[in-house]
Image 1 (cartoon, rainbow, N blue to C red):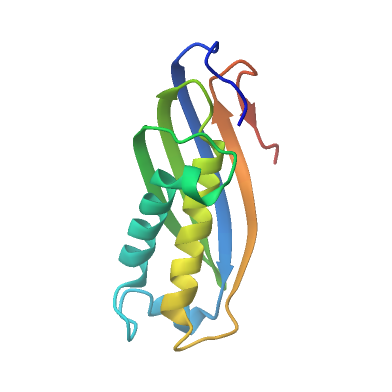
Image 2: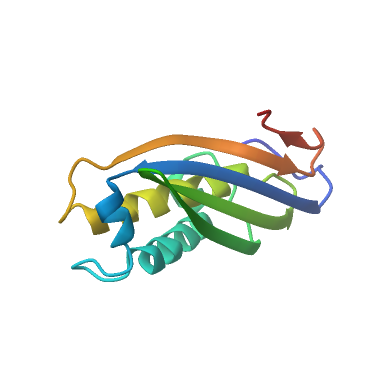
Length: 141
């Protein structure tokens, strides 16, 4: 792991997203699938995963998180998954936001596979980060 002990403790925020492509029929049933409410399960999976990023990613620093939000935006044949993570620490929260999205997407896949095995997780990416020595960054477009 990189030594971050000399860095100042500051507020850091990161936002990430990914997409789950699936049929409109499955998209309409997400809250009433055979396993239950897929969105509720995915939200909790994303939050839990963000809190355990240091265990998922070998050289990531474990961070005490101040806030984790996981939200969903349905579209035509897809569900956009978004995560926002806020931490006060010496290193950024980008990995936590990305892990939250990935875990939420995987939990959703697990929930929908009984009705649609062809769902596809795609476009996992960092959207924005704030704070830290390198300052703010935002994906263009």
